[in-house]
Length: 187
Image (cartoon, rainbow, N blue to C red; front, side, top):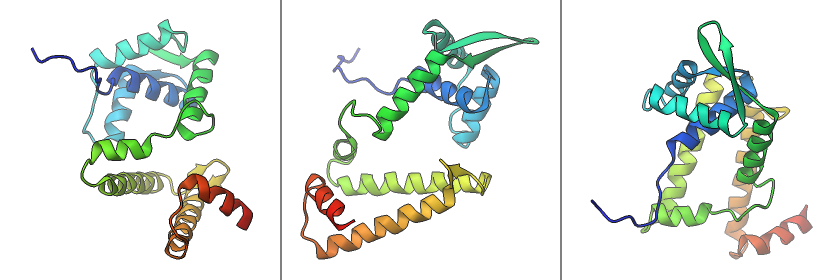
């Protein structure tokens, strides 16, 4: 048996639980089969968690008070609780930078994932997100990002990124912390 090195890989149960909470928050109650079906659809069939993964993840949400279970006919359905909504909101704010619960580790992950060329990891990551936005727009061209249509917000972000890139051509490189006050002064 190989020695344990202290690094843990992804925890599928946690991912399933968080995804289940997000689906419950947006769409209402879920049941195990519908959740597995949705995950399979979102991953183009690359991952379809079985009952042995789905139901323990849902049960863990119930045990933590993040969801409650009930019956709808023969199916066991799961509904998010106020505590689950609060936990999901906290996680979303922390991951999106809305609260300062920790540093942004994106650049560190790029160096970990591509030791020879972190830029390649960043480009792959960008490509992945661009494809995801395209898939969402194919499913629902009128999808919103907050109060604005996703397409409009996406185009606005692309224009802003292009402007930042052009500014880098004329501005000597400065760390992001040093550029922010300059950008605020220009605005």
